[in-house]
Image (tube, rainbow, N blue to C red; front, side):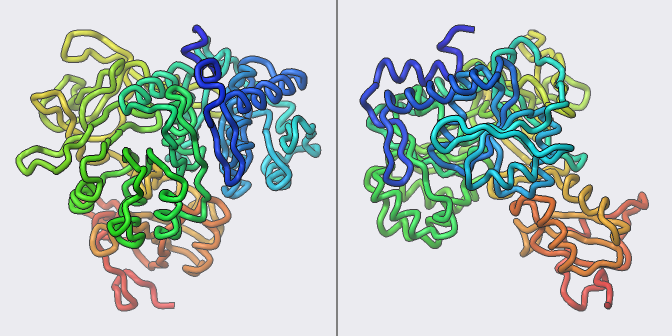
Length: 515
């Protein structure tokens, strides 16, 4: 692998080309590419001094900030496999991630050190070393010796955790080239340039952030970190986009919808915002029409892809939706091959499962520290057999080669762009004292977009939600919990999830247990 295919190579190239251009802004602090590279080089050297070797697995347990961005780049430059972690997760869930990913080291700062120590609990107090400025290195599990990773990750890689059906998050292991391929393509496709200012609103644990961090380097643009609190105040967010002269924004559709419905963006569209990118969930058709009208000819892109492929298809939308045109998620990113297969494993023009092969497809899942590869060898319609990832998404291929997306074939859902496996929530409930049975559903009536948990047992609704908040990130905690005496059953004697999903659930509901 040459330097240009490595994620840290993107920063190195940007320093050579745009040394004096702004690279990163966090509040009132700004770093040029030369200054950012100097900070990254210094921290990477300290990591090596502390014994970090190529292939070691390092978690970045730092609130979203310039320090977190520097730590990610430094870990990659030191040859580590880097995993951004969310300090807002319950410690018990972070602990599961450490074990799943085989993460033996954590980069942290003073504000998150106590949480890091709690998550990294063991027989001894974790050892911690100050490295550079505010950043420290904490050794989490000295006795863990995870199996070596394949050659593609032997000199580092990137891990993003997703929800898992077993109740334990899965570590998605991406190689340098997986992410760098996307970053270089995205910068070229969207025409990123040094004058651009990217509004970085996504959590660093979310795959949308790979555009903010790495495509920015590929195009020499400046990454401007958005304060987290603004997501709850759409009007303030619109004002921030304007005052910070943001020219590129990559976000989930729900953020755009909030800015249109509650942020007043239609009355004062940010003057410098020239490009809107979205991914993570479907854009409601009427809201998309409004967005395109407000964008008034600006570039609008729909990116699609599960975390395992980052982005694998794209669509540049027309200025106004064509009534006769079937809505699609576009065609494959160059370097990828995307097609739809039926239940027999044959390519089909009917509805089937979307499969992805090519440059952005991940190496596999980290499970108990070891790599498990869920891909399969598939013969595509051109006759070529390729290593392909079955996404679990249902779609159909049009005559022009674009993909129409229909939904999931399993229990996964998207909520505010986050992928949630309902099985993980149910697993936490079923492992809890006082709960005999539990079912979680996404509402399909007037409660669409909400998650509801139904449980049998000796606990109250308040206790159920309080329990889940100690085990799961807030975006996975159901909106309501309902204690029932019995679950409705379908003709096969299994819990009728469709009935639960459609049930309005009032105090007079027949499902509600009288307590």
